[in-house]
Image (cartoon, rainbow, N blue to C red; front, side, top):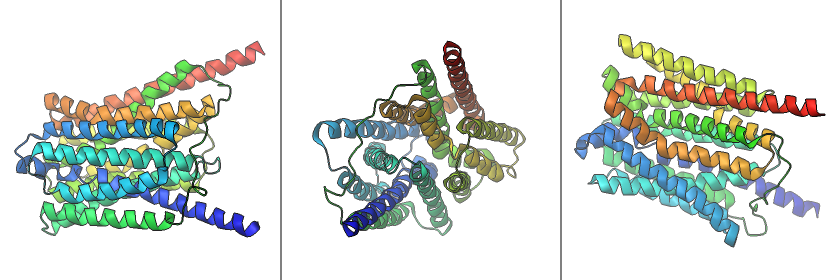
Length: 402
C-alpha cells in the first residue's frame, strides 16, 4: 500500500512539473510575434497600429477557449491533461508556420489558433496546479516559468535577427523549440491515466467573508494589470524601435529585459512566502507607476540610457501582481468559483488591452505609450486601494456588530 502511494505521489509530482513547464511553452508561443511586428508591418504592407487587431482576435480565441473548456469539462468530464498536451503540440506547429504568412488574414488566423491553444494550456494548467496541496507555491512556480518563456521568445528572436537569420526561418526554429518543450511535457506525463490524473476540484461554497462589491472592484484591478502587462509585452519592442531609433534586435532586448525583471521578481516569491498580500501588492504597484514616470521622462528627453534599467524595474513591479491578486481573492472571499471569475477578468483584460492600446497610440503616437500605461496603472492602483478600503470597513462593521 505504501509502495502504491509512493508511486502515485511521484507520478503526481511529475505531472506537476510537466504542467509548470507547459506554461513556458505557452509563453513562447504567444510572445514570438511582438518583436517581429516591425518586420511583418513592412512585409504585409500594414500599418503597425493595425496589429492591435491581431492581438484582439488572438486573445479573443484565448478567452473563448479558457471559458469553453471549463463549461465542457463540467458537463462531460474531459481528459484535461491530454487536451493541454495536444494544445501544446498544435501551438508549436502554428508558431512554425507564422513566418510563412503571406497575408494579414492568414497571420490573424494563425495567431487565433495559437491564442486558443494557449487558453487551453493556461486554464487547464492553472486549474490542476492550484488544487495540488492547498499551497500557492506551484501557482507561483508556473507563473515563473511563464515569465521564463516570455523572456526566451524575444531573446531568441533578437539573437537570430542579429545573426542575420530571415524571419521565416526564425519562426521555424522557435516552432521546433516549442515542439521540444511539448515532447518534454508529454514525457513527464506519459504514464498518467484516468485513475492517477487530478480531477478538476468540486467548487467549495464556504461562507464569503467580504462584500461582493469589493470583488467587482477587484475585477477592475486584475483587468487593468493584465492590460499593462499585455501592452508592454506586445508593444514595448516597437516603442523602443520607433522612439529611440534602435535596431529590431535592440528592441527585442528591451522586451527580454522586461520579462527578465518579471521573472526575477516571481522567482523571489517562489522562494519567499508573502506575509502581507496587501502590503506587497501596494509596493509593486508603486514600482510600476514609478517605472511609467521614468519612461515618460526618457521619452521626453530622448534618453536611451534609462530605457533598459527602467524596463527591468517595470518587470520587477509587475512580477507577483497576478498570483498575489489570486491569493488575495481566495483569502478574502473564500469561494473557488469567485477566484475563477477573477481569472476570467484577467482574460478580458488580455482581450481588450492590445487593441485599446493600439487605438490610443494611433491617436497620440506610439511615443506616448508610457503616458497610456500610467493611466492604466493609476486605474489599477485606485481600484486596488478601494478594494482594500471596502474590505477594511467590512471587517470593522463585523467587529462592531459582534
